[in-house]
Structures are given as structure tokens and as C-alpha cells.
Image 1 (cartoon, rainbow, N blue to C red):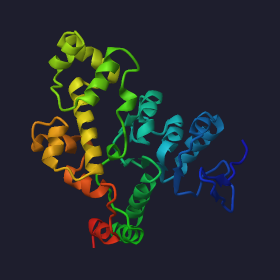
Image 2 (image 1 turned 45 degrees about the vertical axis):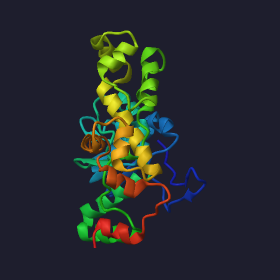
Image 3 (image 1 turned 90 degrees about the vertical axis):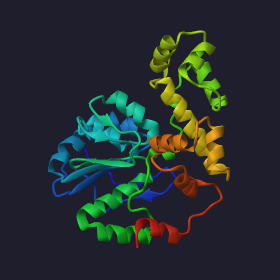
Length: 292
């Protein structure tokens, strides 16, 4: 097998080059980080490269992947039986390709033993801070976070940043129609009986068909759509939370808060303060959030 060059061209045109080449052995290396790539399918199909990662991992203290780099670790069998994550848009493919992996779709990064996996590109910063903390302690990691104006541990998960419902909707037929109707009528009665009646189906048959087509129960889907609509309202304006809850079909503000916490893992108030458009977060507030 030949050598792997360290000359790398990024998607935005930037270049990264090292002062040596990676040969077959990883002896003497401490940590191997596999970055994701738009060409990840080519890399995961490269048997020589996969074998190099697999055999080289035996001499490493730890492994890590960023974004779709998880597919290379998966192809090498290094994630079998482990919890792992990748970018939210690729979690379904990761599950299908590697059923032995316990895919955690809403995790920014996760450690399972000596193996770390992370979500999208910016999640690599969260991962890097975790590695710094592991090697040098929380104090050093906190100083790095303050210097770079980052969260030491970002609250919430990937669902704050993903439109994760689209891939789960049936492509055609009555279930597709009802999901579109749900999205346009989120404040209406969306109980199973009411939805089934619209399609002329029994509640039991509707629930079974919906689950088969979308991989979600009708109740879970309705809640997810309502929370997603609420999320957009919180980003775009100053509508009072009680009004947001009513417009999105929640019985009261408490039910809205519970559903939001269940799906997004932060409160509606916290979400609005961080993501409302046109509001910038001052460095001072970021430093307060990571600690002083």
C-alpha cells in the first residue's frame, strides 16, 4: 500500500499541508481524528484506507471523528457496539449502514470508551474542548473556552439546529397528505381519532400505517411539528410565550415548555435568548455562560 498525502484542500478553497506523510503505521501517535468530507463515500469504500485506520487504531490511545468521519470508523468496525453520532443529516444513513452502532442522533459529541464521535463541523470545537479537558483538566479547558468565546459545554443537542422531520415523511399517498395537513393546521385537534377520520381510516389502522411510513407515532409527529413551528416563532419575533403555545396547539404554557424541553433540551425562554434573529450575544454574556 502506498502513502497517504497530507496535502488537503478544503471545501472553501483553503489548503492544509503537513511536513510529513502518513505511512502505514500509526506507532507513536496518541490520537487519530478522522474529519468528515463531501467525498466520504469514496473514502469509506477505500479498502486500503479502511484497513489502515483499523490496524493503526490498535496502537492509539484514542480515536475521534468529526461529522461524517464516523462513516470511516464505522467501515473499519471500530464503532460496533458503541454509542456514536454524526451530522443530523447523516444519522439515518449511519443507522442503515451499520446496525451494530447505537446511533445517538441528537448528541453534539459523545464518548464511548476511547472513541469520540461528533456532529457537524462546528461540533469539532466542542469535541476539541473535551479532549483538552481530558488531557489537561477543566481549568485549562475553561481558559481556552473563554479565549475563543465558546461554551465549555454547549447546552442542548443537534435538534436545535436541524429540520429533522423532512426525511421521515412518506413520499406519497394518504400519510404524506395528512402530514402536510398537520403542518398547515397545528392549532387544530390533531388527536389520532380526528386524523384517522380525515382519511376514512380506523384509529388503529391509521396509527399502524403512520408508524410504518414515518417511523414515528402520530402523537410524536404532531408534537415534533408543533415544537418546530414554535421554534421558528421564537427565532423570528417577540410573540409572548403563552400566545406561541396557543398558536402551536399546546393546551397551556406548561405543556408547551415540557414538549420543548423534551425535543430541544432547552427551555423556550433560553432558546429565544440564544437564537432570536437580530439579537447578538455579547462576548461578556458568553463568558458568563462558560463561567468566570
